[in-house]
Length: 164
Image (tube, rainbow, N blue to C red; front, side):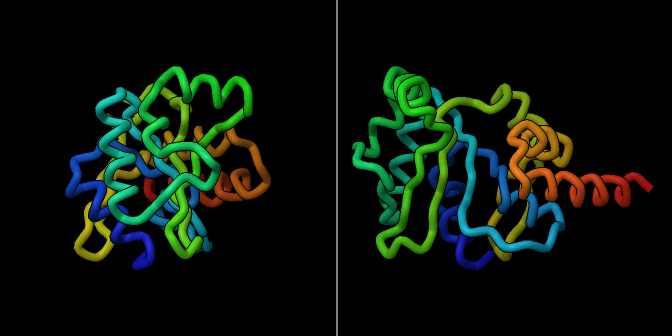
């Protein structure tokens, strides 16, 4: 988690509206597994998307594909990426290529609902906005990849233990 903490600290300091999903959210909810990236659903309103990209570029992150980082804030460009390239996320890499931050180019579910149901969890001194357990299960079930389905099983076990 220490590897990712500076990212979340910068997002919080920059007042970026984001919700952590994917493997990092799975780990924060209590599943023990490795993850190599940070998956984020950010508010895609142009000013908000620019803020998110600005925070990442200030940390030394750049798109992993040859596009200008600021193009992420353009809804027309994101729609073209999704339509023409079947792009789900735009990956940003740090200068060493060790850490990836994946920003969804379209909302996987209604952002305001995802935001309102999200929970704030602490990693060290850093607050992290994380998808609710139910939303995370739904997102992973929808993705349907083998690792996601394994995560769903583990997250459902956690949900069962919490409800007792």
